[in-house]
Length: 86
Image (cartoon, rainbow, N blue to C red):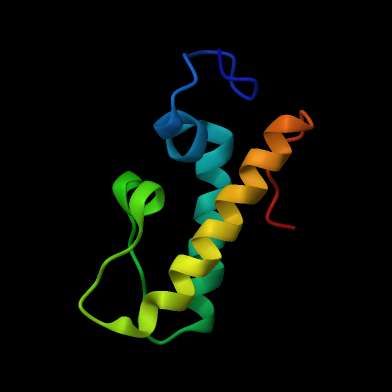
């Protein structure tokens, strides 16, 4: 079971995207990113899990941030803390 929501089985998709607590984290990350950049991103669970692949190469930095955020989620889960953008 998911350590955060305790309502469903913890799969990779749930752990990194579908869990309600993780979704809130991603909403804050995406909102922050879109406020800092001219070209907004809209991501799906597939984009979070496997990488954001638009036509423009200007999103390599977003993919780097996405990987750091996923590692942060993983570390938070290992220490029984909810991921927080703050």
